[in-house]
Image 1 (tube, rainbow, N blue to C red):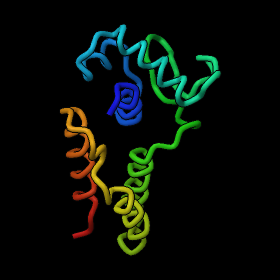
Image 2 (image 1 turned 90 degrees about the vertical axis):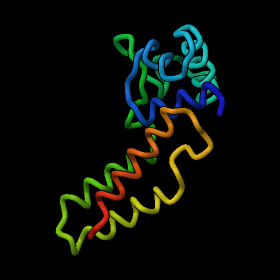
Image 3 (image 1 turned 45 degrees about the vertical axis):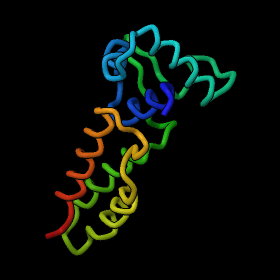
Image 4 (image 1 turned 90 degrees about the horizontal axis):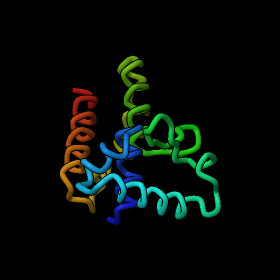
Length: 132
């Protein structure tokens, strides 16, 4: 996985982060993160100005603009929440949809520690949401 793809995955999974936080997670200096963010923006939205990008930059933190980006991990969380708020007889559909989203390991081609932690967290969420 390339550094811009790492950034996209981290922003999708961890939300708004500073250059320093992203650099610490990736093991690179903040200037490298900033360069990689430019590459990511250009690949996602060639010719789009930074302020109009799906990658937001507010108060020295970068994130994804939630109403412009669809993230499977966020949809998974929404489905689990929907199931939790329903009687057991009606929780099956959102749980089945969440299970379908989780049918492949999260970031399966990435072996970095942060990706392994995310996989374990989502696997635990699915396991704890499954009916007994």
